[in-house]
Length: 179
Length: 196
Image 1: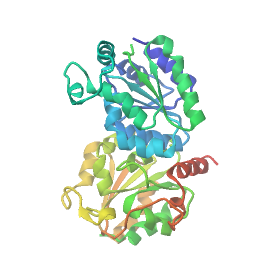
Image 2: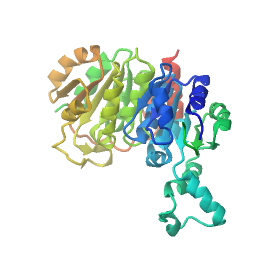
Image 3: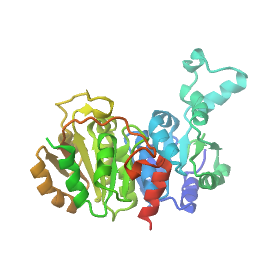
Image 4: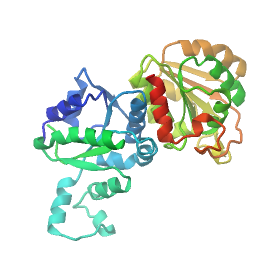
């Protein structure tokens, strides 16, 4: 668990103007805070690919957007992300909630060295969204760090520094619920 | 049904200091009418994401008009953007859906629902309060000034003739200045132009 307020504080500290995304159970508390926040605009989208294109436009227009989506939605948004954020080298910070992270890490502990074959990816005890998240981020050239709890909140500011320095997007994988 | 000339010439004349974002089959033709630093080609970009990219620019710069020339095939790829745009209520957002019923770039294959799609009804249903439809060049030209001087978000469906535009590249070989540089450089050029 991490406090949503700490994440919001980090966004304010980095002068974020817009948060674009779709809520899930892990990010709901942050969405609730943003809904009542007067300093950061919340842009709700119907599908995650939209969020990346809108963020690219916001950045062109001089704003400082952040995209907040679940890993399932990130997977859905493949070409929207590639064709805008990656191709334009937008220094965008993405907050990606990590559905299935807990089950995946337990499985990795208990079955070291296991590969992601068809049996694993269809195993009902696992969430395949989690299994393919990090390989996909790596394949799509999106560097990332983790937010496991309150103590990791400063990593969000580090993500902004990395994105700006590299003129490239940077993701924070949120492995816990925000409350 | 309008020709591309009947669509683009009045737009180039009346756009003022608006940002104009193009995609697909009007990308090259627009370059023949406009050499403005506020033009942006959504080429070598994300399939179907021109309307939402333009919406982002509009949301960042509420005092600057943003005109998006979107294709019908592209619009069909992200119909949800109609809802997002209507909810965002950007007063400076002018979305033109250019309906030729085909994927012109790939050889004029029909789009799904060709001949039956009613984008104006979709826009109304999504929450756009200002929706226009044009099938006649005279009506388009006489209405355009008023359309652009009003408050958005606006959606205008314009019936246009299919043409024969081929695939678009970003290279020195392209005649239009806005296609000569990479997407990353084009994005930075527009960003600089908007803040100079």
